[in-house]
Length: 209
Image (spheres, rainbow, N blue to C red):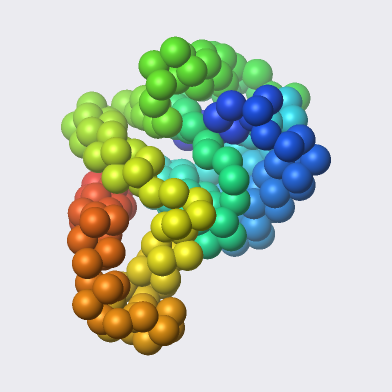
C-alpha cells in the first residue's frame, strides 16, 4: 500500500540566526504532532536540522498539516518559510509509529528528490499523488496560494493576516486592532484575503473523500 509522505525544509536556513531558527522550527513541528496526533502514522521528525519528514494517515491530513504550518508561522510571526514535498509512494519497511526514522522505500527517496528539486525551481510546493485530477488541481491551487502568501511581510502584514484568518470579518478585525473599518477593509483587499480563503477552500475541498 502506498503512503502519503510529507517532507519539508527551511528555505535559506543558512542565512538565519541558527539558535532561534532551530528553536522555532522544533516548536512548530511539536505543535503539529500534538494537534494531529491521532491522524499521523509516523510523526513529523526533524532529520537534518532544517528538514522534517512524517507519514500522515491520508491526503486530507497531509494537506491540513501543510496549511496549519503555513498559518502557524503567521500567527507566531516566525522569520522563516518552509517548502514542502508531498509524495504518495512505497515504504518497504514497517512504519515507525514513534519517530520517522529507520524507514526505507522508493516513496521516501522520491519525496526527497522532489524536495531537492524545489530549490532550483524556486517554488514552495511539490505535490505528487496517484489521483491525477487531484494532483493537478492541488498543484495549481498551491501555486496561487504561494503567489498570495509570498507577498505578505512579517513586520507589516503578519499580525493583520493572523487576525483575518482567525475572525474572517474586517469589522471584527478593525475592532480588535483599534483601527477604522475603512482602513482594515482596504488592507483586506490589498492582502488578497478573499482570494486566500477561496484558494484554501479549494485545496481542502479537493482532498475530501
